[in-house]
Amino acid sequence: MRVELLTIGDELLIGDTVNGNAAWIGRRLADHGVTVTRSLVVGDELDVISEAVLDALGRADAVITTGGLGPTSDDLTRDALAKAAGVPLHRDQVLEQRLRDRAARAERELQPMALRMAEVPEGASLLPNSSGSAPGLRVEVGGGVVYALPGVPFEMRTIMDEVVLPELAARAGLLRVARRTLRTATVWESVVAARLAPVEGMPGVSLAYLPDPAEVRVRVTATGDDAQALLTEAEGRARTLLGADLYGADEESLAQVVQRLLLERSQTVATAESLTGGLIGADLTGVPGSSAVYVGGMVTYATEQKHAQLGVPGDLLNVHGAVHPDVAAAMAVGVRERMGADYGLAVTGVAGPEPQDGKEVGTVYIGVAGPGRELFVSAPLLPVPGTGPEIRPVIRRMTVVHALDLLRRVLLGLETPSATAVAEKDREEPG
Image (cartoon, rainbow, N blue to C red; front, side, top):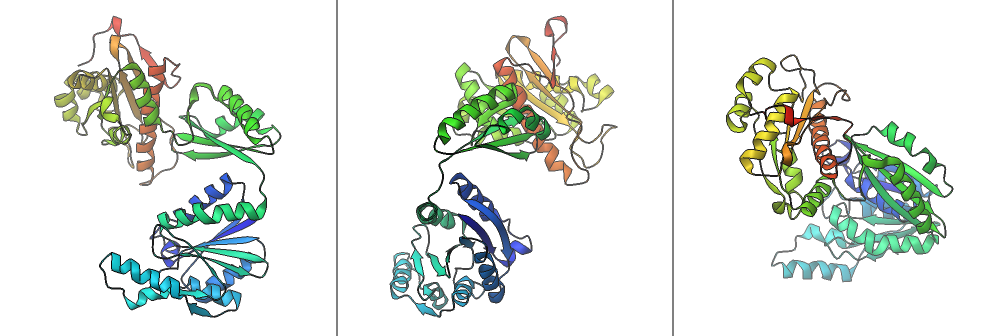
């Protein structure tokens, strides 16, 4: 089964809207063993859409389109499919009544243009849309089939999961496929790939690497009659090879892992943030149940607030500035004490795009202060990818990942290759 994707809309071409539909459909098809051979974006032009559909059907068994099924004048997918199939549009009376009933239930007047959604190519089948008013369409063209779905993401996903995927599976007689996504943090993609070379060599197993700032997800796919057993074997080998750099699987986030570890220990954390401006706290509180483990946080962006709010020694700030490992340590200790948490997690650094106080962009220090006067301070994040204004959000996101991963490693008692353990018994606690 070869499938091509066609996403429709001028807003996609000019960058006003990110093409998230194609990414979601591609993942869902891959999870069901369907091969996506091409993905194309076209604008709101009838002839362009029609030609793109016919061109795709010349190569693929099925084409999935999104967008252009609404009521406005630039919604031309229905017209384009009719042209591609060489058939006229006709008014579907059942669909028209459904649109009228829906408007009545909402106590709204049905606009005449809304009835455009009841115009369908002759011979097309309606795909029920339980999440909205515009149904999807199934149009047979030659020996292939076109599934036309709405561009609204939650409507598209409903029709895709409830109708299209089961139909494609039935048409294709698909192989059994089993997948698992493994998630690593603070390790480069090339390092992950090198470690997993033995898994890549397993028959019936394929790996895909999906890098994000400071994270690499590895999608492990096994195919065949014994796909699940093969996946279990491949995943076990991968987990062993990745070791402590593996933090979770599938949709599990670092914040979820940290929350779980703290819950298991009945412990809490507080955060002190400079360059991230509250992003670490946002990640932690984005997990349901975070109030059980997250005490609170302080965003001490200005240097003087690090002293006033967190007790970072003034002479330390005067001598070294705000970006220094001892400052990160003092921030972690200060927020832990002031918030009454078991752990303090702190970050300070230069997010760019310009150097600060003689410190290069990407110089970031992370401190973790825990019970028993344990203190860990990370080495700088340098080097970082890219330059210019676009690097700032990347460094901030990398900092969040490195900070949460350092806390994870400390909680698990793992080696922290990116951090230096500081023996507190021989020194006075900062702040």
